Length: 151
Image 1 (cartoon, one colour):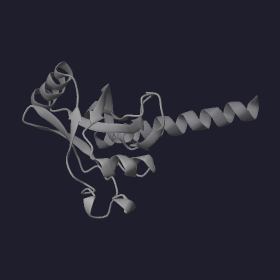
Image 2: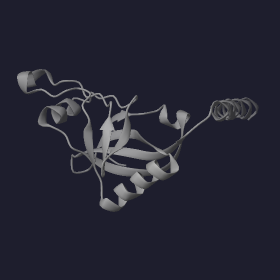
Image 3: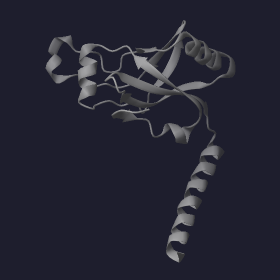
Image 4: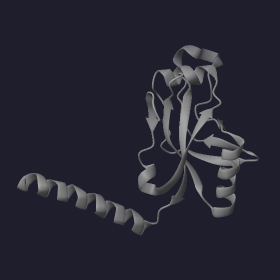
């Protein structure tokens, strides 16, 4: 990923084991692009779902663009993800056969100025996995503090 970050789903790493990432384009309207240019979007509660033979982004919030008046978009509408056929087949297979989830992790502008979404094939964490991750993070912080104080 390179380019300007628009939105990030920081909770994804805590709630899921992220296995493989893909870069997907988004099918957007003009007012959505203008709203994204102002840097306003939220992908924290969003997820991607398989509908037929395509993948759709659900519950991503792109607020209405103030100057678009009556030509504005629906803030939480379903947006089609643009991927290569092999990537689509891999994602659809993993979701249907293995019970994986498709989680958006980052929304950003690429070098060409196009809005791109980084999605990850994920497996949900159980409560004990989350506790383990929290304990590991706390230990790393304490270890760094001890080394800094002694050194």
